[in-house]
Image (tube, rainbow, N blue to C red; front, side, top):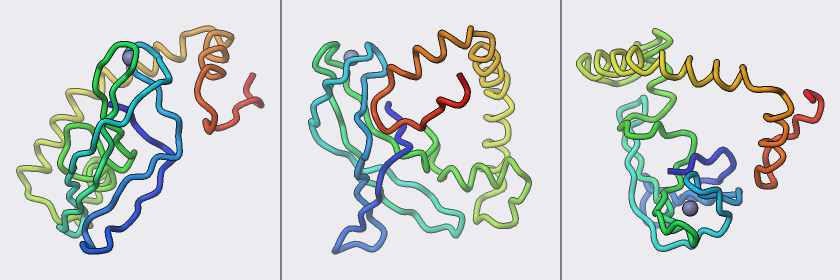
Length: 154
Ligand SMILES: [Zn+2]
């Protein structure tokens, strides 16, 4: 899976709940780092919104020309493997749950999932913070064009 930060959502002409995700990034393979990915199709991905509506996103399927693995481009409004949009999950975790239309059992499961994964996320952030700044700079410079400029940090 490839998470997109720069993209546009293009509304389908015939369906007001359906959007095409148009990437504005050059995706790279998260497995081998190859920049040559071929579009091999698309698939639907639903996202439950805070108002209870579901929107359908059409996301691209890409095959890496090097390792042949298939990846999907997910816009950052989605959380991988979750039915709810990222804003709904954020509202639940922030405690502003009165603003979202969501079952109590779903709220419980999302909080439990985050409690289970939060230690892992904290470990990842600590591992990144512990790396030498020169290594992070080298990694950042390898990223495709369009990534934010962080030259002031180095
Ligand atoms: Zn690859």
